[in-house]
Length: 496
Image (cartoon, rainbow, N blue to C red; front, side):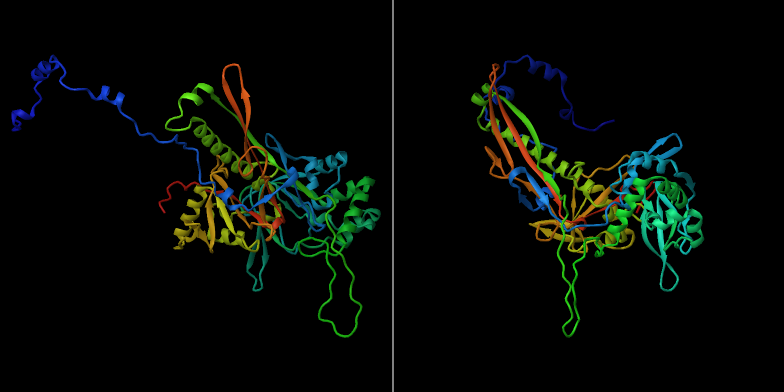
């Protein structure tokens, strides 16, 4: 039985009596009609840190286009191949064979189709050897699905990993590059008698793989029956015989360490004849405000100003998204294939980040989805390593080897739980990545963004065209690298 005093218990009869009495003072609800409410400006959940827009050095682009002039490069191609799948059958798209260095620029679709039809599909188990060092190199392999590890024997006999080939990758593209005119004339039997050169590495499947295989003999047969292909191969071999540096650029002849009066080499620096041009892209919207709202409801906040502020925030978010994901100029799509590496085991490890860092000089920033940063943190925790920190304009951001890791939610995470990590060098002076924009445009509201009055319609609605112009350029291939296939979800049962 409760011992609480009776005056603590609600008296329903007392409430009923008070409900019938006349009100003795002004109620709160009525009083608020005369009060001034303190308001916040309109809030927007979709605003992010937009580190990429702050990181990029912005280059002024007059005329709306930016041309990237480079030294002439002979080694082109060696990209990724696309496949089509019909049930369990996988076929290479004939035009995609142009990603093989020897076939870059060859556009005879009938010959490419004949080559594509000669590829054989094979299913490999994890651990199965694709190519073995020292064995004859007589096949080209296209990896349609899975991961293949490439290793070379070390100085003391232990294997050293030299790379991982994933979906769309090519193994043995140089197998078909040593095509000699005498090979075509003498026939396959004589060439086989001389024997192909050996593999310089061992390729082993890390996961179950689907690969398409082209025997060297099948390629020789197509070459023997196509005059256009023979002429194309001859041109490519002529290009391959020209002096070049390790980056594939036309060499600059120099002399050093000499004595006396030797004849010095003459040289010139050759340029690409068709350099790439980046045109400024645009993000636009039409902001509409009723004239009655603009006239009567501007105290204490300017309605047009708040509408414009939130619209610009949305445009800047779209701008950063396009700089990452646009297929024409987005960073994820414009990284050179030679600057793309997969993770060694799935999640991003310190070894992966070190390898990505070692691929370029002067890396100034990593960009990663917050989930990828968290996954990297878990891998560091497993090894007892700690993130570093970098001070960026008063902000403390995580860093690895002194290079800041900036969060960027615009980098996609797939349904399979994989993402990418970008590493880049920035600035024109460093031959890095730059942002492109044009300032001084009519009715400019912010650099590269303008707001233009479009008039008032018959419904008294005022319209403003809000536009921002932008793009990004990668000045040399090694300015931007990508760590691909980064697993960002925590494995089931992982408590670490």
